[in-house]
Image 1 (cartoon, rainbow, N blue to C red):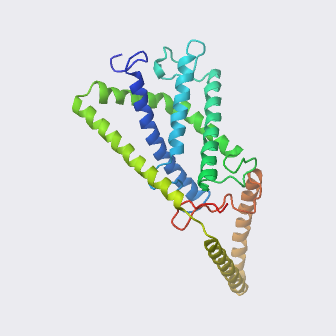
Image 2: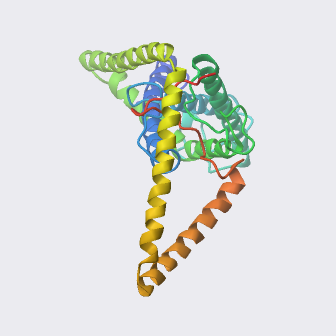
Length: 308
């Protein structure tokens, strides 16, 4: 009891603010890492900065983690006398029982999932309508709305909510609560001051990055001349591809039969893989013959401004 702060404690508001501040920064960083690898190996097929800030942060994920934690906190705490929720440690939000998954968990999970989709919708509309920049694009996904939300990625948000609720939430709360006690309750004054200063420095850098990035966005201009140059460049690339394909066909016709047979086997295997990939794309894409999303990044991996 001495090592854990109860909800009735007068320091609770400070503790909750401390937990949310840490969760926001950690969520923003790990969300950035997740998006970088997702776009490198799944969508863009190249290393790009998935966010609008220069540093390794994606505030959308930070707000998402804060939102999921806050919703689970209020739902579980204020309905604790009416429902039994998942509480594996027996001290989640200081609820006085231990419980595995229950059917009541569907309530917080549903609210969290819908809230995350709405968060993505609002964030997407703000950037598309306000800054004319698409940080993500679901325009080619079936069932999409304004290209900023779609059923497939809404399902992914639901999966993230389930992982957070069952796998992270109970343990994150205890970990940050213990850290709060160590830094601000049981520690000496100097350690407390250092902790506050360090947290302030982290958010100071974050806010400077945010302000400069928003200012940069306001100055981005995509001219018609640039569009023409890009179009010409793409035409040159297409012509090069045709020439290379023609050279390959000439070389292939001169190969020996044994080598040709191996090439045909490899080609059949590639064709089989393409058919499987095409089948999957037809399930989730409006037009499988075009890319999953438009190229929203310039040569430096930064999001570009839309021309409309």
